Length: 156
Figure 1 (cartoon, rainbow, N blue to C red):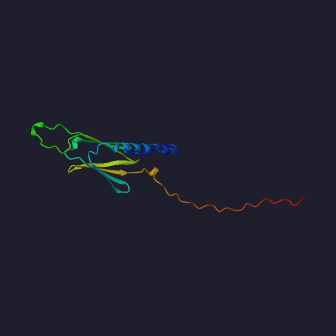
Figure 2 (figure 1 turned 120 degrees about the vertical axis):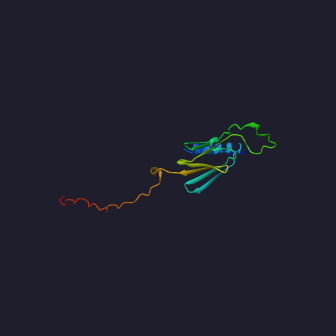
């Protein structure tokens, strides 16, 4: 497994610990299970969509939890009656899953829909007004006047 060593960067930067932790966790997660398959789409500058293929899951089988900077999606299959017949081939996954997505600051879940076996989660980045960049107007400066030196008395 190829791993990138962030130690030299950690030694020379301050305040980027969370970023390096995210990158290290993502590289560890890449080797794990890829179920269920998903897409991440950027719909506009501040709008994103995550689509998970959750065929066979009902809305009651899915749980979406949004915490600060973390979105956790869990699927737990309910017990299916076994007397419906014997499967000769099982190609549709019936196992539960947990998928985690790290979210940037100020990203929140706007809505979630389940349709045609696809779970669609819309995300929006809403930066608070206090955190948005502001243009500062330059006011007119008072004209400076030259201060005359005090008159010296010529009587010496």
